[in-house]
Structure formats: C-alpha cells, structure tokens
Length: 87
Image 1: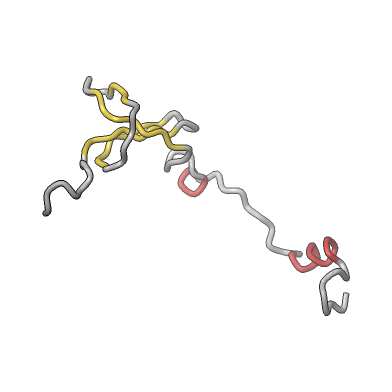
Image 2: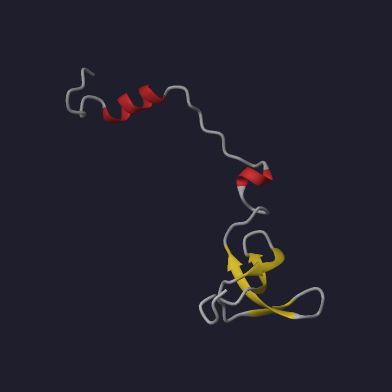
C-alpha cells in the first residue's frame, strides 16, 4: 500500500440512539466524540439513528401495507384529474 493516502482503520463504537444499543467494530469513519467501552478502553464514538436493533426488518415489527384496492384508492383520490383517463 502507498503511504499517507489511506484513512486510519481503527476500533470504533457505533451507538444506536433509538434502541440504546452499541457495538464495537473497525472503521475508517472520523469522529470527535469518544466513549469508554465495556473493556475499560476509550474508543471513538459514532451515533447512528438506526441499526439492526431498531430496524423493522430485523426486529420483526414491520408495518404491513394493504396491497388490495390500490387502483381504487388512486381513482378515489385523483378521479378524472389524470390526463387521458376514462374515469
């Protein structure tokens, strides 16, 4: 590798602020905040809004949308406003 062109690859703590969940991994992300981890060491901290602990796909709390009646919903909402509609 060429010297002085690659970002620093280091241990970083990512904290999901919506689920009170944190994990330690390696990253090149830059941050000014730090946090003391469970092992007693201090690591750079990156706050994220969503992670596997809060994402609906991973938590199983998905919102199911009804797919039936989409055309009827569209026609009710927009009626004969669409150009070339027969509505």
